Each structure stands twice: as structure tokens, then as C-alpha cells.
Amino acid sequence: MPKKSDRVDNSDWKNSSPKTGTGETWRQWAMANPNRKANAKKALAETDPNSPDFVATTTNTRSGTKARDAQVGKWQKARPVTGKGGAKSDAEKEKKRQKMIQWAQWNPNKRSNAQRALKKSK
Image 1 (cartoon, helix red, strand yellow):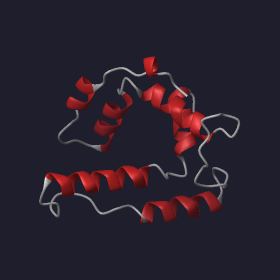
Image 2 (cartoon, one colour):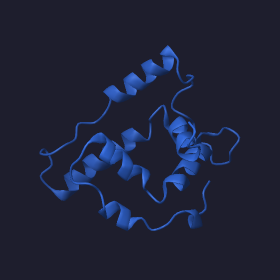
Image 3 (cartoon, helix red, strand yellow):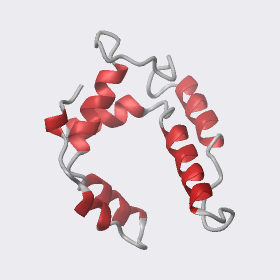
Image 4 (cartoon, one colour):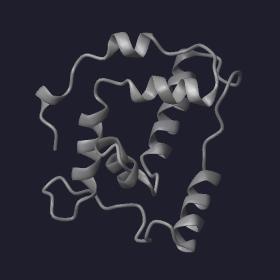
């Protein structure tokens, strides 16, 4: 589990979020997060069964198998509806935001994504 000292203030990075752009623009912005490695270490600790910070993983399937593809497909279909419109107040917007965050926590590929963040070779 990363220490508090591993994380830095990333408010400048958050404020630099692109207003529009391609997927590559968003990818480059996300990879510039100064807390990216700390977040990845936290995800690895939460998914390592030998870690004291272990949180049960969302899938027992292996990466690159049909079972994993099916699990990811099921997860993707459960994505909450978001976007412009629908929310009339700030409270409703925050509720939709939290719903999306909760959904993202159950990504079956979360551990492998974290490993790629730590090891550029993957």
C-alpha cells in the first residue's frame, strides 16, 4: 500500500484536463498524472492475495482467455448511463459521478492495468 507521502497534490494536473480531443489526447493526459504510480501500487496491493491490503478481486479468470473476455464484456455492459443532460442539480451530477466511479472499481482488468503503469515494457 502506498504511503501518504507517495501521493502528491495533482490539482494542477486535474485542471489541465483537455476540454475536447481524441482518445490519444485523453490517454496522454491520463498518463501524465503525478499519482499514477502511487495509484498503481495501491491497485497491486489490493489485488495481491499475500498483501495485508488485499481486497477480493472481481474475477478469477486468466488474462487472454475467453472467460476473461466474457467477464469484461459483462462488466462493460453494466456501465452506468452518463453524459450531458439528465442531471438537474449538482447533487444529481455527483450521484451520477459516484455511480461511475463505483462501476470502474469492478474492472476485471484492474490489476493488469496497474502492472502496465509500473512496468513500461508491458
